[in-house]
Amino acid sequence: MAIEATEPDKTAAPPIIDTEDVHLWYGSNEALKGINLTFKEHEITALIGPSGCGKSTYLRTLNRMNDLIPGVTIKGEVKLKGKDIYAPGNDTVSLRKEVGMVFQQPNPFPFSIYDNVTYGLRLGKQHTREQLDEAVETALRQAAVWEEVKDKLHDSALGLSGGQQQRVCIARVLAVKPDVVLLDEPTSALDPISSSQIESMLVALKKDYTIILVTHNMSQASRISDRTAFFLQGHLVEYDDTKTIFLNPHKKETEDYISGRFG
Image (cartoon, rainbow, N blue to C red):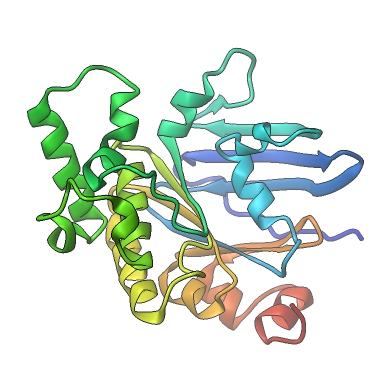
């Protein structure tokens, strides 16, 4: 299947992430087939497409989470602020602080809310208690959950609702002050109210972060993203500003997917 994808304009400000001709194989199965994508700072980009199209696999290439899967082979370049993250000797722990990730299912650690949020900070340089306290409050405020948990910071995070757990997980990522936040269907396991709270939070966060999220929810993508990339069978079919993708796509495959003809 040969698909010629539309590409973003590279004449503007340098992207924070630039991926060129990215291929990925699970064993002999080629899951990504030459992906070229760039991401601008302080934007929300939605990755959409049917199940198995490669969007989550691609998301995981951006902070080397696929390194944890046996039998994976990756070719191409993934550059963060101009530096190839797959270059020999790169520290994946440091990378994952710069490019944090939030998963589909809320996954708080079996610790207190406070210890969840400070977990990444404690892996790095030493911090005073005052610095940790400030970081916890800042991250929980950014994640729009501070008012709900401020009086129970030393209670287990596992006792929170699903939506609160997911926002604490987002706060855990934000506490280490990443440049980029990756989210893999962050609201798919949540109720509509919790989903709406997280959407509003993400829109507010883009002033400080670059946000890339995988979503099956077309309404969500159209509501909160600045740009949208459509994946199909391991190919990038189309990448453009979200209004164009949803109202005037250039590719028939995109139009068919957006309109619900398949997927």
